[in-house]
Length: 449
Image 1 (tube, helix red, strand yellow):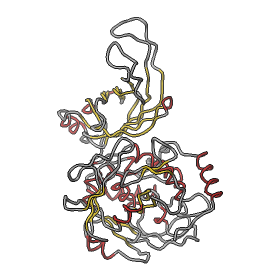
Image 2 (cartoon, rainbow, N blue to C red):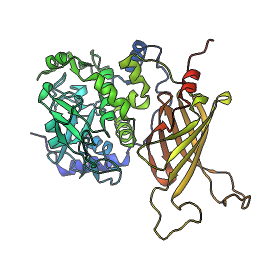
Image 3 (cartoon, rainbow, N blue to C red):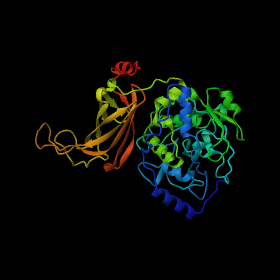
Image 4 (cartoon, helix red, strand yellow):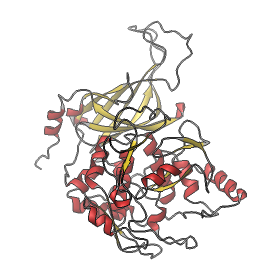
C-alpha cells in the first residue's frame, strides 16, 4: 500500500519547494573540468568520480521527497498546476502523491538489482530514489511496461498511443507512429518507447550504468549495486530478483544507443534534468555532453571541436519555418548566430505587417567558444526600417544567453534562456544540407603539436 501523508505536510512541502524552484541551465561552472576523455576507460573513471555520492532524496516522506521533486521535474510546461507523463504524454492535475492516475516509474526496473527499500531508513538503497532515472508515468502504462527491457518492437506488438501535449504526441498512424509498443512479459517482453521520449530513456539508463559501479555511498556507507547495460538477455534474466544484488543488468544497450541518436535532448528533458540536479547535487553527463555516450558505450571517443566547417544553415525538423545560421571565426575563437524564429504567442489576427508577417522574430547571439561548446549573449535589435539608413538603429539590447553544444559535425543542441520573454529550453539542431560535413570532419582531426 502507498504511504499517504497528511494534507498539511503536503501543502507545506509544496510551498517550500515553490520558493526554491531551481532555474534551468544551472550547470555549475567547472563541473566537468576534471574529465579525461582520451579513452572510454579514462572517461568512465573521471565522470563517475564527479557524479558519485549524490544527496539521496527520500522516496516517500513527510519531508521533501521524490513526489515533490518529480512534480516539478515533469511539470506541464504550459500549466504549472499539472504534470505530463512519460509514456502517454498525458497532462494531469498534480495529486501530490498517493494513488491516482499517475505514479513513479523506475525506468531501470528496481527488480534488476535494487528492489528492497526500507522506507524508514533515510540512507537506504540509493538507486531506488535516484530521480535521474525516475519519472512520472501513467499508472496503467507503467503496469503494461512491467519489467520488460527496452527494445524495438514491430507492427504486431500492442500499441499504447500518446496524447497531444506541449506540442507533440497524439498523431497516431502506422507503426511506429508516435506510440509506445509492447509484447511479451517481464524479461521476455519488449517495450519500445515513443519517439518523443526514447532519447530521455536512453540517457537515463546510461546514467545509471555510469553512476552505480558497486562499492558504498561515500556519505552514508550504504552498499550500492553495480548496474550494467548489456545486450545479453540471459544476464538480464539472471539479475531479476526480489532481493538487492551486487550486480544488476538492463538493456538492450544497442537499442538504447540507437534511441539516444534518434531523439536528441529537448526542453522537457532539460527541465527534468535541471530540477533533479538541483536537489540531488549531481548531473547526467549524457544530457550535458551527448557525445560521451558514443565514447563510453560504442568506444568512439573522437573529441568534437568547433571549427569553420560548422558554418552553415541549421534547423530543428520539428519546428517548420525556423532555423539558425552559424558563423565560426577560428582565428579568434568566436561565434555568431542568427536565429530566425517567431514570437512566443501568435499576434492578434487583425495585426498586419507591410513586409513579412508580424509574428516573425530575428535574434542574434555572439561570444567565444571552446572545445565543443559556446556560451553566447543574445541580442535583440529594434527601431529600424527595411533597407533604410534612417532611423539609426541603436546597439542591440542584451537579453539572455544561448549555449550551443555540438555532438558531432552534423548534430547539436541549442539551450536558450531569454528572461524578458520568460522562456528557456533546448532545441536539437541539424544541418539543412550535409555538403560541409567533410570539411568539418577534416578540420576536427587532431593536429600535431
